Structures are given as structure tokens and as C-alpha cells.
Image (cartoon, rainbow, N blue to C red; front, side, top):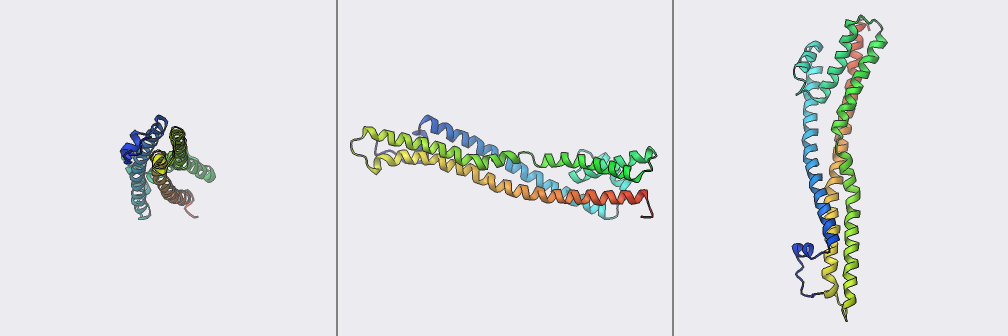
Length: 228
């Protein structure tokens, strides 16, 4: 082993064993994918919060429900998650009225089921790629550790050909190995932070959706039974 080896990041990577280089490449790809999902999820959740707040202002601001329904039908592509939930429930409500259904329980249950189905689809969309971030956060350090262990094994195996082992002989090999651990942490830490933040934000949106669904069901029920 050459004791004058240049210990720079580039040289450590290029001089590492093939397996360690493959581990680093895998972690780099995972990190890039993770960051792309993080930025995409940031935009998605931010847009969902803005659209939810805007529709809540319209709904609780005294707007006519039929007007809201017609507007959501005309702008189905641009409608937010909460607006689509309302659209599904009110569409079911109108269908029961057109069929002449007088059973309040049947109408209410139908409206709730319609909104719940749309709610589940919206939550699936919001939670997309969260599992990937969780996996990256939990697995990446171990992948990096595997590369480190393998690199250290190679470093000590190289000492077999050295008559007198010194720190200068073993330091470059250990440094090469530790790059894998650093790369694993570089991939894991942002993924864990992002996952926890996104999970909290999505949980808050879920609570708002569920509260709205309950209130909307009560409002539509009162329209069937005006005296209540």
C-alpha cells in the first residue's frame, strides 16, 4: 500500500474496491431519487394546503352548495382534494334526490360512503412515495455500513503484505471505507427529516378532511329534514 496516497474525496472513491464503489453508486442513486421525491412532495402538500384553505373559505363563507358543485364540476382538473371530496358527496346526494329517496339514513350513508371513497384516493395520492423515504431513512445507513465493513476488511487484508504496519499504511484504506458510511448518512438523514415532516402535514390535512366530511354530511342531512 502506498503511504503517499492522496486522501481526497475523489481519490478515495476512485481507489476504493469495486464493491465499495457499487455501494456508493447505489447510495448516490437512492439519494437523488429521495431528493426528487422530497421536492415533489413539498410542492404537492403546499398546493393541497392552499387548495383546502381556499375551498373551506368558499364553503363556510355562505356560498350556495349547488354553485360550489357546479364550479367543481366545471373545474374538475384544477379542483383540490377537499373540493373533490365535496363533489363526490354532493353528487351522491343529488342522485338520491332525483331517485326520490326519502330515507334520511340511506341518503346520509350514501353521501358518507361516496366522500370516504374519494377521501381514501386523495390520501393515497398525498402519501405516495412516503414509504420510499421511510425505507431510505432506515436502510441507507446499513448499506453504507456494509460498504465500510468491506472496505476495512480490504484495508487490513492489505497489511498482510507489509512488514511493519503503521497508521500511514492503514489510514487511506479506512478512509475509503468510511466514505460509504458518510454517504449512507447523507442519503438517510434528509429522508428521515422529510418523512417525519410530510407525515405530520398529511395527518393534519387528514384531520381537516375528516372534519369537513362530518360537517358536510350534517348540512346535507339538514337539507333533507329542514326542521332538524
